[in-house]
Amino acid sequence: MTGRRRLYPSDAQEVLARHGALLQRSQLRRASSLAIPAGLAALAVFAIWWLEIPFDQIVAGLSSLAKFVALMFPPSSGGHLALLVHAMEETLAIAFLGTLIATVMALPISFLAAGNTTLHPVIRFVVRRALDTIRSVDALIWALVFVGVVGLGPFAGILAIAVSDTGALGKLFSEAIESTDARGRESVLANGGTQLLAVRFGLLPQVLPIIAGQILYYFESNVRSATIIGIVGAGGIGLQLSEQIRTYDFDQVCFAIIMILLTVAAIDWISGKLRFAIIGRRAVA
Image (cartoon, rainbow, N blue to C red; front, side):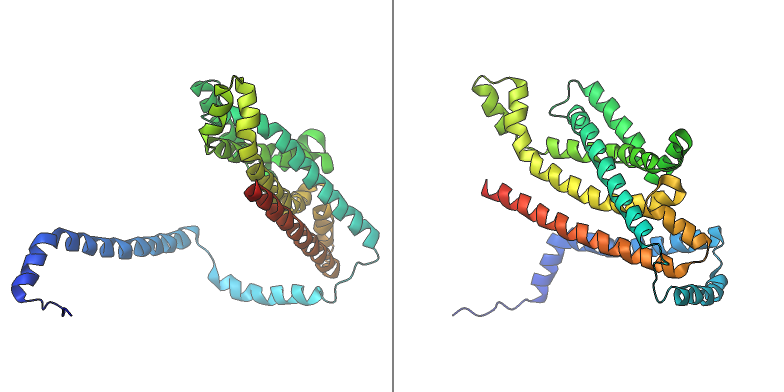
């Protein structure tokens, strides 16, 4: 058996002489790890001071909030169950059609935005900047624009979701395409296939499961987005919520919120099952 070697002062000095730079770096890292949270906290305090956030009004507003919450119970449809169900169905239709249109538009655009499938680097740069521009504008802003263009109703909501999601899905699809293994396309080309066949049989099988998962997630998210944009006149359950809040029918507001929560939970459960099924098939393949 060999015992532990005893560290003498001369050995410790030798270790410090050899690895002193590492110890100094660790101290700098410790200082930076403390400086970053302190800097963020100082920035937060400055932002609160600069925005003049009235914290004293929060305490006063809690009593009003408690009053509104009390008015929500018990939830009631107010005799408008059929209208609320129709509005929820309208919201689902807006989310579905908006996601479908965005998918159809984003898929071909994503090939132009991906570095390994684009026709030219200049085209890739222009397409990516266009997607960034579209994605930088929120769906609520697009809804306000299209309400002014096509008028109130579900059509404005569909267009708002379709345009907003085209930018987001185009970026996600292009990144999925760029992360594919080039050997699949190269094997098709080596066997005499064209570039189109290489994309069809060497690239698409790799990205379709990823794209399908992203589409399912965005459909689930768009149900919530369709609710929000409905408040500005784009139809759906959001429009009913806006009217009920204006008339102080908070029991009906609560009923509508419960409908939205149950619908989103059901869609989340279904889309989760579909995503796991897609991932499972991909693993088997």
